[in-house]
Length: 227
Image 1: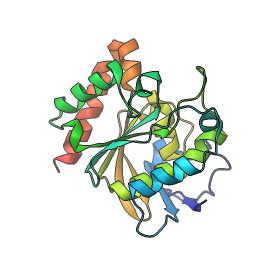
Image 2 (image 1 turned 90 degrees about the horizontal axis):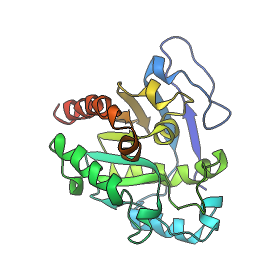
Image 3 (image 1 turned 30 degrees about the horizontal axis):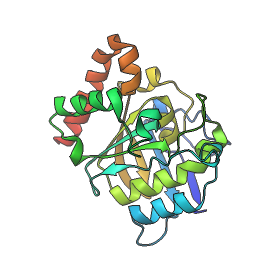
């Protein structure tokens, strides 16, 4: 397993890394998270996929459920990261299928971005058997694959769809309602990447009144991409 060293940029003083994935590191105050990650030299998406297929580690993978790795352009200016795959993704093995995927395409079109121009993936790469939340251990097991994907794709901007995606990237316990509405900077191996958290399309289908807030987040993305 390739190693990680996390560190946080504080406005005043310093703070040691969190003991667990969701240790609250006051990301809402600093809006910056810095992390060094030792990835393989000359890494590729094909290599990461092969490693995922060869080394099922977490409970979600061990159930024998389909692998939903990712899709789209690489490199890409915009990377879309969701929480975990759903049953609609199983037949194709691609993320954000079904009605959530239709809404995602419309959301991107609203800011002038074609989905084919983005790289799309989830934090968790497999569909767990039954409907349940992912454990911290499962998230930690999948997180290195996600960081490797980010390093290969080299996005300028990441949209983190849902609490799990935002919390996993920014190492925070704060809710998506607390995090959204702002832009953050993830310094991954000293490469600055803007992270904009917002609601998951599947959540917006259930709670359509939140679409207005999501639109405000998308306008943040548009402003960064246009800069």
